[in-house]
Image (tube, rainbow, N blue to C red; front, side):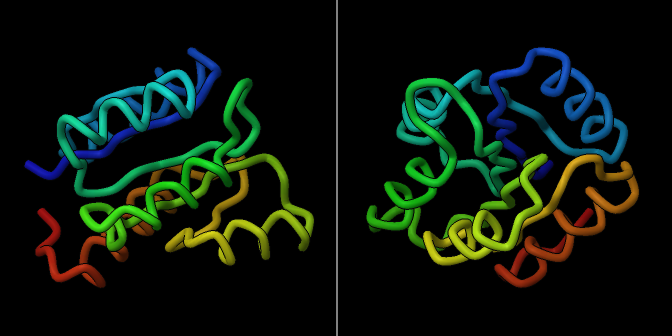
Amino acid sequence: MQSVLVVDDEPTARSMLRLILVRAGFEVREAKDGYEALEQVERIIPDVMLLDIMMPGMDGFTVCQILREQENTVDLPIIMLSARADPESVNTGLRVGATKYLTKPVTPDELTRHIREVLSIEGEIPS
């Protein structure tokens, strides 16, 4: 079963994403902020990460940049999922290494389609 790490400071958003992803057949882990995300990735690298941008302490841009600088996570598929749809945020997300940048709200079908796409790009066979 392919794993998704959901990184979002909003408990409701994490719960909703968990429900969508479990129903789609993914194993889901959660992190409430950037620091916790980096700790979890140090232990077990997920197949894909869903990463919010606006979080206290360490934003999603910084998390993505740190992961791209580490040899073991340079190719980790990272989908930024944010309410920020302005061109500057989208460009920054892609510049720091996001595989995809999606804006909230996103439908369950759209989200799972994008996850399966990045897993296919990375050579995985979607379930």
